[in-house]
Image 1 (cartoon, rainbow, N blue to C red):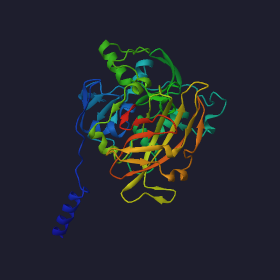
Image 2 (image 1 turned 90 degrees about the vertical axis):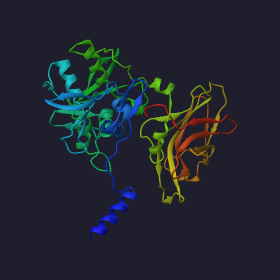
Image 3 (image 1 turned 60 degrees about the vertical axis):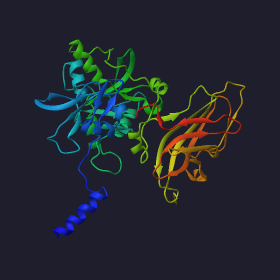
Image 4 (image 1 turned 135 degrees about the horizontal axis):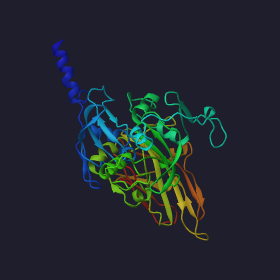
Length: 401
């Protein structure tokens, strides 16, 4: 029996089936000159990265939370804390900065009692809306885009399906206020406080990024430097606020260490786009790998890459039209091999098809490519009829890598 166990153990080690947890090497950010490593880096990468937590704005330090000394590191949007006495995955948590912010702005860590607004701005009862959820403990609704965002993030305790409500609560906590209007950085925004975050609605951003998390970590750091107890609503953060145009203007090339996961799974946030100063803009988003489409499996050693393509004719009125078709799109993988858009694109729901785009018009749809199982797309090439080719470096992640 003992010999059999040794054989099994050796087999598991050689095949990567038996391992001790290993954390990624430290990752440093020139923007703030701080690094992340260990369990904090793993948590940061797994649960949203820059878009959820922001950049590190301090080194990991010892701090006291509820009378207990713990290790923690401050980020632009929150504080990541290590709680070794908790069972995984709850041994790493976000700080209760939403509760702290409520205390700083109202003088109480507990929401003030008041009348719940049961009717939305359109006169519809929130209880009748499918995109509203009632939380009995704090006596608050979360609705619309805020609810969609809250439900799409969580601390997974399993590897299947969508997040449960409990897993959503584990990340951002419960709502502690309703939606209200607040001026932040001279901009009037709809916001809602949760125990561990401040949700903000930015209507000027593209749809996937209209809900952003407030810079509570930066505001905390700013106030600690100023020695103030109450944060100025029009805050002067230690780091500049998120501006989508800045990310579009300053893309970054993915580093070799990023490509390890890039070959097996695509980042779930952001999109790639060509230079809008060209005659046309080509955007690819929601890119993912799939092994089977409409009953057809990928060839041996290959996988399907599916994404949503949007093409915009930027020419002024009176300019030339653009002929668009999925057959004019190709993917160049990281090894330099070309892969044209497969006819299986025609089997995909909402597939990109033939279209004549007049000046000012846009058109889009889903498209599929077949790429090697152990590779990843490096470049999208759009060579439409009688047009100059448009190249998008898919190793460039302009938003939230």
